[in-house]
Image (tube, rainbow, N blue to C red):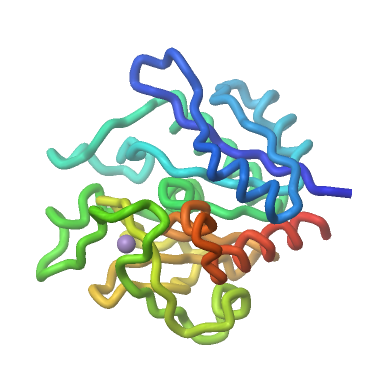
Length: 236
Ligand code: MN
């Protein structure tokens, strides 16, 4: 039977609508899963119910996370914050980790995964790093890989993509600063920015800073392998 994959949804600042990019839906369908879109709820019983029903969780991209979730005051370069989404996802990811549900976190989804597990973020990589960084907010089509990442030896990510280096797209101004204790860093850009993390303690908990769902448009092999591996883990 096809696994049921919960996809987190964005909510605009005026809180008038939930939004999920179709690329996320198509990526799950293409890899053999049944996607279900998760609304940003707040009560614990509903969140428990949602997590218990899904076979896997896809944390989609979106706005910045309120830095109070990692015990920092807002930096002046912090972007848009959406409190209802933060509240929901913080509880959702915690519960999903507790129940050892397979998780694929994309961009904000990776960042929330890290924050929910006790890690921290750069609120703005350019303002909070010394030295010159790569261009992580690309001016190129969304499917187009613009910088390389180096993949850690003996990592889940290396096992999935069978490569030590891949080219990825890049649309972020934040990044993981301190990975939570459960994580190892499984991918880094040449400027040291963390581009992938994975859990040492769970069967399949992977966060990627780029957007593999967009790179499926050009049949990017590593992106296809990542979604296939995620869905496979959700079937077990
Ligand atoms: Mn990047």
